[in-house]
Length: 68
Image (tube, rainbow, N blue to C red; front, side):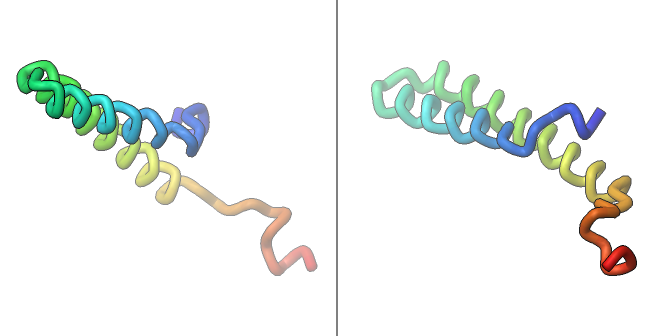
């Protein structure tokens, strides 16, 4: 499952955070808080995926020193 999510998914968190900031500057505090909460939830999810990849990654055999 963790391999199905690309590393570039962090862009979703950044874009959502920028949107939350723009909404806050526009005076839409409640909507900004909701969008920021979504960004935080996605960030936590991506952190869990990164942790899962780090724990289950056995390394790329093409990059190991044993095959040189």
